[in-house]
Image (cartoon, rainbow, N blue to C red; front, side, top):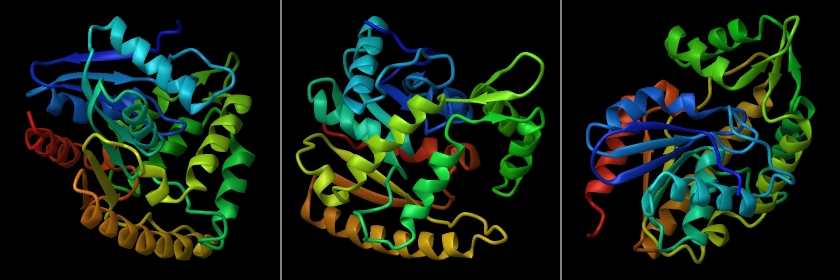
Length: 286
């Protein structure tokens, strides 16, 4: 058994388990978790190879889900609503699929990969860029660069700095190891490709518990020489929105909404994210 690193935000009420995105850590959830703890028992978890959690080999979704289940059992949380952002959103759905008796519901905050192969031309370039930088060693100025990048979303500098520091490991003599390290990161992106190749509708087939699927309502800020990504993101957002709307009409267990934030919504709009989650949990049966 391999237990993952957990931050217990305590609180009373229906248990919530919070999962972060790729290359991030449970620190992303700190502000939202503080708001959620007013009405919930809240645990945030570092995914394998991230933050302060141990590595797994290979980095595979079924293994990750099993370690989450073991960790929750060890903390006395037999049943919970599992909430995830980005990569964590995909993992939350897979946890709900594998543990029907333990997942009361799942919330996926903008955790959608880039469609079926060939569905959105240009998506393969995203995968290439992610793999090129996977598990890299960053310069001593990396944290400051992340704070500047976060400011483009309106994320306060103190929140951005704390989250950036928690997602990397300091290297003696300067510099930062971006987590997960390269082998695990490449395996992780392979898993995302595997799930994304199904397409959202086929991927969600067979998940029986209530699902809340949340799409970012605002695009990423534009970057110089990245116009191709702006175009890809717009096409993907439009196609995903239509597919999610059809799912919500055909599947009574699926609720779909958007939030007035870009993809890093947990850091950008933590209070709005917390309110959305709380409203969804209050409406669950039982």
